[in-house]
Length: 227
Image 1 (cartoon, one colour):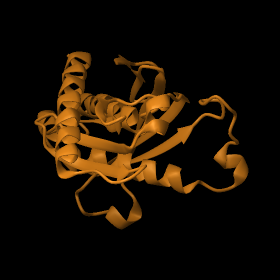
Image 2 (cartoon, helix red, strand yellow):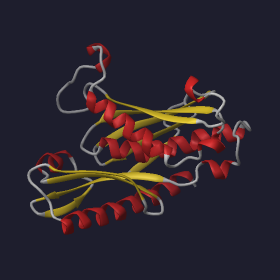
Image 3 (tube, one colour):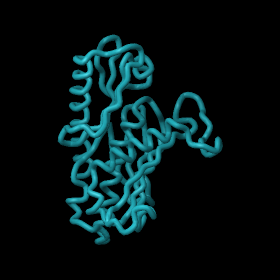
Image 4 (cartoon, one colour):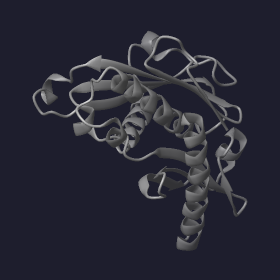
């Protein structure tokens, strides 16, 4: 897994995140002010949008902008990324500023949403640093990003728990989960389902243990990238 900061010139934060064959470009764009429903609250806002390039997979898919509607899967992933990133930031310390995370999948080989969350955290961190340099935050810079978040996929294939599933593993998984953790190992979100049956409590525990260990490695990679 690699995190390449400053991959794009124009955004206030940008990161190319690579999980094996999965590559996602995460950009953070800052605007002064907040949505109308949040004005006067003293709170900032962080949200996300997710999209996949037409040839990110082995066959071409139509652009959703051409279809004229955003698909349910895209909406679901965008909301997941937004929720996860808001868990990392003190919106009061951010002040009435808005940051939009755009996560565009350049190449997909499983785990695109988890890669997006992991990379978007670093892009968000850089965008907050950009605001801090301009003294545009309501709180101290070190209080704004008060915890890190990272995400990883886990699953059971042929009865074995595995970490960070590639596409071939994902489609064959008996159980498939996406887990979002803080740098301290607490859970932000857990999404899991029995794709080809049910799973026992001990299997769930083993998957969560594996995911927490994986997220700890990702958190360390984030720290090194931001050092």
